[in-house]
Length: 111
Length: 113
Image: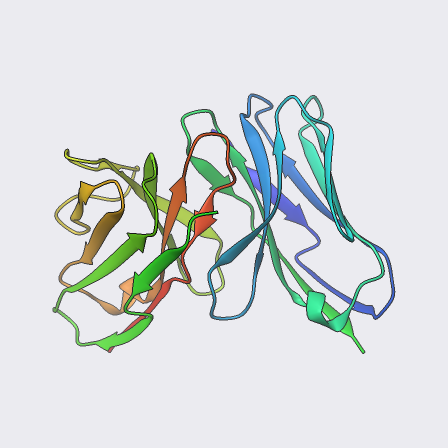
């Protein structure tokens, strides 16, 4: 059974810092992995999608990497801003189009 | 990317009643899903909404409690039946088309008194 874990559960950093969020999964047979952002009381916004054949994806200040063999993905946020404060979720697609979500990392960027 | 409208955005309901949540997409999509997010928790898949046939439910979720309809490729409903306080959650609709990223609606925040 696929399980997805995110570390740390919560993170508070001063503005301008570069930071790394971690996601690990127990079954390497994934179709893709997606990182989402969730603001309080809101739905999910897709940030980056990495197909199983890819090693990384970049969008602006965000870079996500994928190492299927070790069951890990990282989301790198460069030069963090207060507007980046949110909960970040990773989700793995099991190949039957079902997404298994991680536990999330609550990020707070202090001005 | 698909634009998803979910209604209502929030509701407060009495114990024992039922509520139907609507999900409308601005384009035809292959797959639609319903998720639940309990307070302080991550998302759990309830079911896959199948167009023209019965939904496919995940372990722990049953049709009598969460009946789902999907009459066409742009619309689906989820009903939460005979509600209890334990059903207080955010319910989210999502869509998937090919290899595109999965997209979510803004969710329905449901509170049961």
